[in-house]
Amino acid sequence: MKRREFLAAGAALAALPLAAAEGDAPKSKVVAVRNGEPEALFRKGIAALGGIAAFVKPGQKVVVKPNIGWDRTPEFGANTNPALVAEIVRQCLAAGAAQVEVFDHTCNVWNRCYRSSGIDEAVRQAGGTMVNAHERDAYREVSRPHAGSMKSALIHRAILDADVFINVPILKTHGGAKVTAALKNFMGLVWDRQFMHAHNLDQCIADAALYRKPDLNVVDAYRVMQTNGPRGVSLNDVRTLRYQLLSADIVAIDTLAAKLLRFDPAAVRYIALAAKHGLGTDDEARMEVVRLEA
Image 1 (cartoon, rainbow, N blue to C red):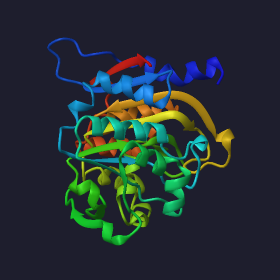
Image 2: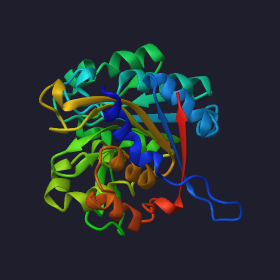
Image 3: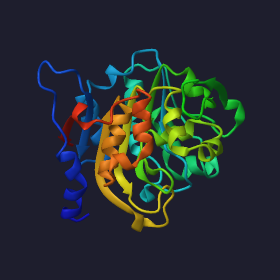
Image 4: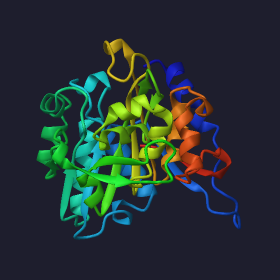
């Protein structure tokens, strides 16, 4: 990647506000790490949030939800980087997690997606468990009457039963929603995605996040699909940025992720809708951004 492209990609993050002054109300903390391999980016970023032990306690059941939606190998940037997913699984188990499950409700044939993405093998080698998400019986109906459009949905039981939920999307463009990141990754928790597409997609994406708040969001921006998302056409769609974003605030992290893709967050409608649900802040003045080199 050319130096000027790399600097341009990071310029939006470099201009974001620093920590709150003493005495101010707490801000949503977002860690932005660059210039490393996926595992090193995560190690540096999670340390800035207090380490994995700040999120995972001994004996807890953890669910890690990457994007595994497409029958694509890692270099295409369509799915979350398998090395990142494996590192998260290893750290959760090292923190004493009783079990770490990983799944996605895929768009292409599920077993091909699990295999081609490299995530199936990486998770198993790290000691985690890949679980089924392609059968109706894996989901339970849940209601959220205060949702804007999707007031009930079939949600994957692993998310509903987990003690800890770690949301690990890949950053890329999307033809309908403009940006795929932390909020958009919730479509892989829901059985009936067609309902979401047919009933105001942006509102349904914001609504989906009401069903289970993530304890941690990790946006994989190592390889970024800048065109023809969400599946991509060729390797020409992908740029290697070597970035990662981490935060407990799903709205704040998507606000910054959109800027990393050079989108105005205000143009990504579901971000503001999620903020109205009280799921986090889209106000950059209310964010503490910690910028690190891996």
